[in-house]
Length: 226
Length: 249
Image (cartoon, rainbow over the protein chains, first blue to last red):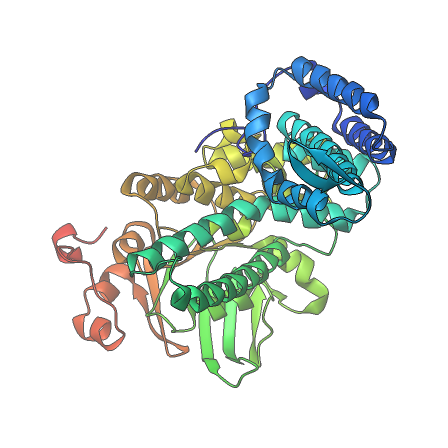
């Protein structure tokens, strides 16, 4: 409560990276990603260079590396899939640490791991150093269609409201003896999700009414309005 | 008499599913009055409110605001004149900063630059939230969000302020602060509420809406002390509260 900077992915700071204009950061991230994805996976040294560049930006932003690393766990399900590849892929087999694995699979897994991790890390750095509000203003400066920017703005605004609502529903469920471990209770989760959807939909209607009441005519004021 | 700020005549409305919510509502609110609209849940209060700025269109009857009929060609001006503060501030505050949110209405009215800034800061000053102009609204406390929601409407310089359940979910201090703000405003107020002590404190006059029609209209003190009327309309004073011990304000 009361913090001026509250998004969970955002790390408050005043470093040069925090101050760079948001639209340049977005373009930078986009460029970086294109280069990373386009690099052949056999160029091992190149990925080292990318990591060093990214590391330098992180160091400059003074966001603690542990802060970013903790948030990297979002990548885990994706990595599990990558780990499977060496065992299921076809082609010549090689032996690594006493296990026989597919050479193609191993290389593909490395590619996924390296590119995925760099991508997630770079995106997290952008999120950590840019307020959601500035990010939207940046996208607007990049001439992203206004409707898309508005949809994103509403998403950011109501994400916390809907998450809170979901949390309250979860507490209410648990208070009445619900257990997520019990498969016979699972249909309840589906019904809760449905209820949450309806509630969000109705909230959307109420927000629209409130907007109309203040003279909304289909065009939003610019996000950057101060 | 002068032209009333709000004049509702024979307003009837049925929802598309056939549910008749209003059966011929008549009410007048004069310039500078503060009027409470009381009534049990499901009496049609919210439906009535949504007619005041043309969100809903009457099935029969008409609504005029300072002489201007609520109808298609005047909607923009009507929505400037009638400022509705909805019950859940999260429905009303959707921009990235308090300033942008308070500016939303005025921008829609075509204001910009210095005049826009003046309106926004003035409205925030009126509710004591000027220091929070650059905060994101969802990081404020509930009471602060309610006050900002009031400012979003005040920034449009309305002729009548319509408050839907202004005291709901507020802690006693926030409730009192909001009362102080409402009293300090030089604007006509229509307040929809279940909070009867609040109605007595703020509004000299009260209306009771029940089953889609106005069944009582008089001094708040008289309405709240008419036991038969109160019982007939499912209205109850909170435990320990008796207007008679306070006396006529």
